[in-house]
Image (cartoon, helix red, strand yellow):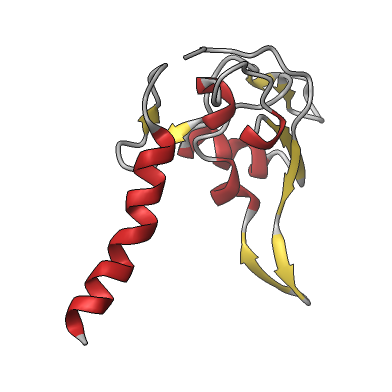
Length: 125
């Protein structure tokens, strides 16, 4: 029901590795999230993305290309919304690849998404 809860807390996101093998690269983990603070190119000081802009595929590529290896992002785990999660902490809706709207039933959508494969599996047996 809120656009921005105003939290100053978040998660530090980086490559997920198994030994030396990257399982999930930083670039993929950033798409659809809001950075907690402005991200600047460490060499030039140029702004890559501000904290009010959701990170797109192109911006995630720029971040990695600039040599940045970890980014602090908004997360529903640190959301301070009074009811539910705010739109900025939730980020991109996986079904639409757009920012979720305030008041959207993200919990119900998530539960349905998790339950559907189980239903399909049950029907096959």
